Image (cartoon, rainbow, N blue to C red; front, side):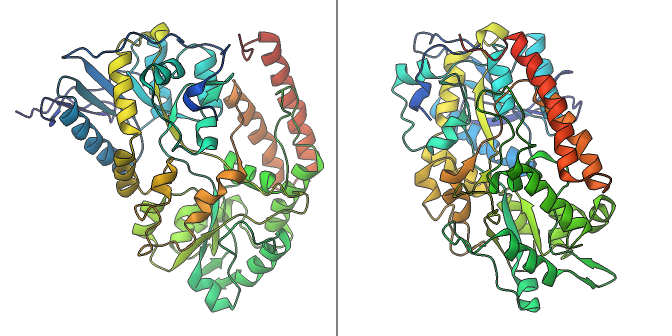
Length: 469
């Protein structure tokens, strides 16, 4: 029998059990590369694996956000899991609004979901360092869980101090989308769709953007659209130019070094000198990088692999390419990271269904389930076998250059792995305002960023919070 419960805080809870029949219920309360993570001495988290075995009648809660396609894919996952494990019930906690904040509240309150989405970089680092995540290496070794099909760099995104705290659900990176029809109309050679063509440089990108920028249809058709101060939208330019955000020990900010300064100055010049990229008010008028790409106001745009949505909503022919290689990259052409993993709440913050949740995590990581998630949600899969299959690289669907995403694995520059990431990005964003209102150049702005970020890094070092034990 299906029942519908009270809906609050725009959250949906889906229960499945027995043969996998769904029951809508309840509401979310006010909150919300080594195989197997081998390694000794990790910060935080529960390290010991409980004895194997699952308990009949246990309910495993699965917390996640995302768009409706995400929820649809997870309904399919939980139905399939319940068919294989009828003795385990599941509860889908779909929370599309303020997902990160509500998860943090649940963890802080000691009432965490059993299994949940987690971002790589600072998110997994902070939660692992503070003991919120169950270490997965002991569980993987206990059950001989094979991880060889994962992209090694994808696994590495969810490690801290040599230990694995999540397994990747997807493996996206920021790449350059371009409108094939606008390129053809302007007679501009399209960018290469592979990582081996070194002719795709800052200079060639600028020439293309100039030729693609024009007044059309009561507004400007911009050569390039991107969000100005969002981390990954500028980080991809710094990374592609060989720049670094922090040193390897996370003790000092390196954004004032020449590669990063040059990348920021290039971006500022795209706006105010070459006028091929809108300033912030014009960017809003254009419809932002995604909608502006859809409506033809941007010939090129930096986007993650939202393949399902772009295939659905983009009406003109399109393709993808790597970001152009900067002059300072010295062979370190790079793309920025991103993506989501699956983690378990540790016993230290109230996690209580470790074995049952671990079975669900393993099940979600099988080739069959990754194929389902890839098909429904249009993601870049974390498994090499799926990435090399027609499920992902479907020749009947755009983009032709889809392998740019997976071939970029060896060029991946992951997000910084450090606590207090929100404080760091807030400080950077505050100073970038001067870059985007054209009141200071990149050298001045990055110098001010370094001053602020170095002060935060000094406090982190003094706290000892990042120390591996």
